Length: 239
Image (cartoon, rainbow, N blue to C red; front, side):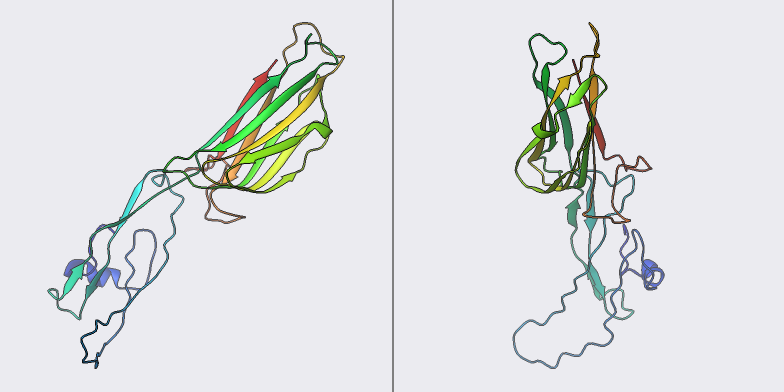
């Protein structure tokens, strides 16, 4: 918390073994007797974990500070507090780029268009891995997906990719995309003979991801529910 729990004003209130967000943790060791008389230093090491909460104020780049202190008995002068130890909140920094890499000449029925979808997690100092990534792309009416043309590539660290595409629907799941990494999907689609002159064909790719591996009730997601579950991006290509 922002206050020192070893001080007289706060010690009793925080020493109640009930802990939540911004609550100081109190470890009680009872009476410690050191019968060792050599010159070595004796000490106690305390290790504990703290969860970064999915709250509005915890966004990439936010610094959280923490201190530790001790108190012996009720003596308010026999105590000390460490300097701040800081941690910085990190989140996946995602861009999704849907592009057309080649067009037929002429651009007419029977022609083949090549599309590319690139899911990139930046190398920002505030970036973290993206987990449970799902990339979808519904090929629109007027185009027919060539299912055998779907290929993938990656750079950096990209783990556990699965192709769930069927019909005119492209779907890929990716277990994890680390920072400074990219996952790329390339495919072709054939222009059908039902298209008309000057018809515009647009299709949009969508990507979602989460902040933790697998399903975790504490993770940040793409549901759009407050405060920060906004892990969803789209990109559109038009011919």
